[in-house]
Length: 178
Image (cartoon, rainbow, N blue to C red; front, top):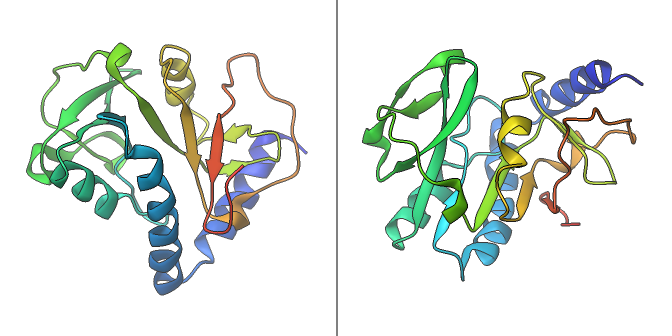
């Protein structure tokens, strides 16, 4: 199947998860991600929206524990990462996403772990995003491990990647990691 078809299937599957189930599954994923963050100081994360794996608790807990958390911001057709010290540092930006108010770009060479949103994924750790290429354009500049997080029902059949696609080093769902 084509990636755009698999994207639609994965989005539909994700939307079928109830709010209660989404919260519980997000907490299971958060527990596993926090284990990876224990010996890291600078973590790249995304601020979740709608029915994505909820990252808000994770972000707050990492900030509270003294970690440096950087989150994405879309500027024109590029993605930058900006340090976030509190949810007060964010405002609604492009695509309705919560983004940093500041435009002060964080040095991606300092990132020790990059947590990446996924619309879908396959057994080879290939990621399907929203189709705009924002993350793909930045992931090849980040030497830190790329950790994709998603719900298990977002897994799709293996697909052929584009030249610009960047595979994940690890994928974490509520049931497993691989």
